[in-house]
Every structure is written in structure tokens, then in C-alpha cells.
Image 1 (cartoon, each protein chain N blue to C red):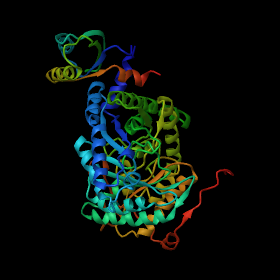
Image 2 (image 1 turned 180 degrees about the vertical axis):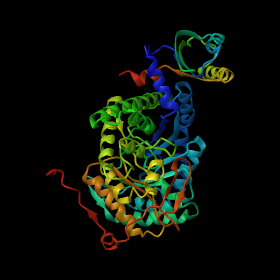
Image 3 (image 1 turned 180 degrees about the horizontal axis):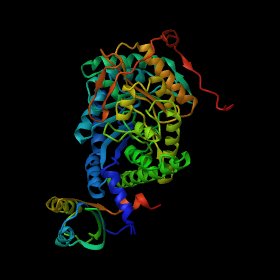
Image 4 (image 1 turned 135 degrees about the horizontal axis):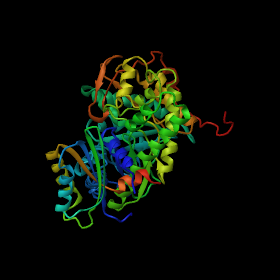
Length: 453
Length: 93
């Protein structure tokens, strides 16, 4: 029998501390939708997505209602489109993006991921067409999310692709200049991209995945923050870690439960729980505030990397025990615009791009939702991507860059994207040019896997 | 326990006369059987938890929740009803 205080704790976590299931993401393979005729391929993809995901929103809502657990987003991830569209005669892949948009709209999901290409070792004809289509695809759709994997630990870093992505990010921002470059909020450049990530904008359905699968992303920075705040100020690191592990366990159990229930009701296999602490712009739902609750004056100040390392590790330890299958990105997210505490830290001058880069070396997932000045050169964006990718490649982890060179904006100006994407101050970028390095092209070789010091 | 149709009804708010009667009335009206009740009063605030079996309930859980929430509004308290499994998964290994 459940204890009185346990029931009250669950209710408080949901009602006051923003505990929710961030996303139920249905992965759908589009491998069987390839067709020599682009229109037929699009029609097959539309039919398959709308058939597989027909009940996704309804199932999510019914679980929310019956169990009282808010499920914020219902989303879809598909096979990287470059793999499916390559068989077709299309030379502009924007039509595939529109198909994804229409399918997402038809089933009522707010984001669909998988307008993606995997180019860590080389770029195929289809990959190039997809990447060249990105600025148009992202500016002409609202729900389509794109990802390009430019590096892996096994292959190294494809610097030709990195340079290309620097230009694509700039052009995407230019095409959506009227909305602060919002197109870039749906474009993720990855190193070591996971195939089962449920979180947008980087979700896609990997080639090793089944026909259809349900993956779940949990949230709950507010719950962890409140638990840390309630501890005595002299509680040591071991006690902090233990407490965070317990909270992570509870949060993840909820995710595991909802994921299995959703999979059962949809009649598809359950994939993984992504153990991430995902902040939202809501008050109190912030990873930066957890770090501050540990005793740092501002997130971004000295000690931040150590505090984040403790947090990230404890979340994984607690979460791993709560779920049979853990996957995706799994770690604390540190997006800037989506986290009110991060935004405050940037505005106070406590958090710089360089400190964020250091933080990404010990947690999920990378330089995420960072607004930089609109006149940042494409080579500089490419070099930031290369730096971030090298952290992932050398440390055998996923890293990503979701950067928005906001047209016409200078450091200290604000950008507003609205909703879960939030808004943020524009961060300063180093003015020293990496152009000569980026112009070399080629591939940075894979790092040695032994000699591990 | 896995197959039981049990819900947890939580009532939070300012204490007053008739809260238990109000909640129990809604449950009885829809043939939900109350299995356990516990409550605590912190200063003037009431926290009450009821566990009820809805296997013979005459309406679905969604409708029952709406009726309870409606009664809560009349009583000036917040009433939620959730399937028990959500709590069990969180607190039991």
C-alpha cells in the first residue's frame, strides 16, 4: 500500500514542480517509401506516417487524463530523409519537407524530425541535395526538424560538411530573418547522433530501429531543484548526489510507465526512455537553477562545470535503475533560450559561449539554442560546430550545435522565438577568424581509442 | 494489484464542513467503492486521499474526474483522480 506522503509527493511534483513527460515520440521507418518518382515517394511517406501516427495524440491525451501525468508533446521521428529520397528523381528536397509538414499537421503533432542526413564520413548525392534544401525547407515549414550528423568517434569529423553547415545555418537564418532566424531553431548539427533520441529538434528514426517504435523523453528540472533546495546548506556532495539520484529515479519511472503504456495502446514496441533533464522557459523549470541551488551565485561562474558533472552523473545513475532501456541523449540539457536561469546568467554576464562549451564536455547535449550576432561569419559558425564536434568525438559522446545567428542583432539584444523555444540575449562570439582552418576542408581523422589519458 | 481498477482521489484545499461527504457522494453516485481514506489537517488546510475501486463504476475515469473536479469547485478545494499505477511505478521498485 502506498504511503500518504508518497501520494502527496507525486501530486506536488506534478502540480507545483512542473514534473511532466516532455515527449512521446513515435519513430516511423520510411525505408519502404523510396520511389523513383518523387511524388510517389512523398505520397507513400505521407500515407505511412498518418497511418502509423493516427492515434498518437489521442493515446497521449488519454494517458494524461487517466494517470494525471501531463504529457507535453506528442511527436514523430522518421528515417533520415536523405536515405529515402535518394532513389527519386527530385533535385530539390523541399517537397519531402512539405510532405512531413502536411503529415504532422494531419495527425496533430507540433514537430516532426528526420529531415536529416548522416554525413560523418562523406556526402552522397542525396545528402548534398538534402543539405542544400535545408534553408528553403526550414523557412517554408513550421513543424519540420532537421539534423545533420557531421562526425563520429569511429569516422572523425567531416570538415567539408562542417564548412557547408556553417553556410547553411547562415542562409537558414537569413531566410527567416523576419522572425529572428527561427528556422535555425529546428536545425541540429550532430556528432555521434543517437538513433533513438525522442527530443526535438534532433530526433530521427535510425536505420537500426524497428518499423515503428515509441521513445519517451522525461522532464523534471523543477523537481530536482526543489529537492536540492530543501536539503540543508551544509549537505555534502555525496548527500546531494544521493538525493538527485532518488529524484531522477522517480522521474524516470514515470517516463518508463507512460512509454510502456503508450506503446501498448498504439500496438508498437517500446524503445527507450531518454533520461534527460529538459528545462522549459517556465518559472522554476530550469537546470541553471539546480546548479545555483547547489551553492553557486550564478550558473556559468567558477564551479559550474563541477556542479553540472555531479548533477549529470546522478541523473544517469538514478535514471538507469528506473528503466529497462535507456537511450537517446540522456543527460542534463543546457539550452540557453529554453531555460530561464540560463537566460538570466547570460544577461548577468556570468555565462559565456566558452563556458557553455566547457559545460557541454560533461553533459548533454551541446551548444543548444544559442543566439549569436547576425554578422557572425559562416566560417566562425563552422568552427564552433567543429569545436563542439571534437568534444563529442574525443569523449565518445553525443554533442550538437543548434545556433541562431540572429539577423541584424548585436550582443546584448534579445531574440524571441515563443513557446517552448523561449527567448534569449544574443551572446558575444570571438572576433578572431578561423577562415584559414575551415577552408582546408577534408576530414579530421578518428581519434585513437587506446592510450586513454 | 496490477489488474485492479483502483484510483487515488486527492483533495487539497481549505478545510470546511462537508468535503468528505461531497467527495464520497460523487463516488457513490457512480458506483465507485471507497477502499481507504486518510487525511491530515495542517493549520486550516486539508489534504485528503481516498483510494477507490472503479471496476464497477458506471462512468469512465475521464467523466468521473470531471464530476469530482466539479464538486471540488463547489467545495472550494482541488480534487484530482488518477489511476493508482502511476503512483506505484514511481514509489515502488
